[in-house]
Length: 126
Image 1 (cartoon, rainbow, N blue to C red):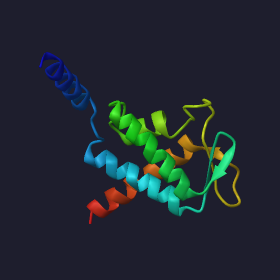
Image 2 (image 1 turned 30 degrees about the horizontal axis):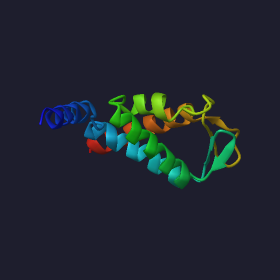
Image 3 (image 1 turned 90 degrees about the vertical axis):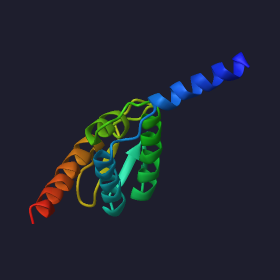
Image 4 (image 1 turned 180 degrees about the vertical axis):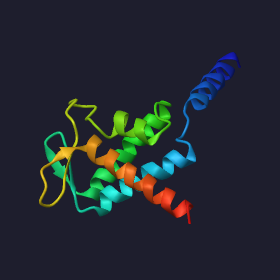
């Protein structure tokens, strides 16, 4: 009985520490990943280029991991901790759009985040 109780308490402690992104931050991250998917740009991780849909799927897995560890509460934290570098190799992720040189994903995602916020502010002002 004590073993079962101890197990339940440890599971409760793990569950209590895992927190999803606040709704506003989650909406921003979802918008960023949707923009990446729809952009026609390619995403490089560990030397290989991937289409936007594959990049989105990969980054959603990283988001799930970060949420499970309670390591992300804002879109900026997601970019810094999950969408900038490979946790395997430590190499920066890159984004390559047609006719443009590749840029680090952090730079691309931060620029997109500014656009997401500007669009939200403009629609709120109406």
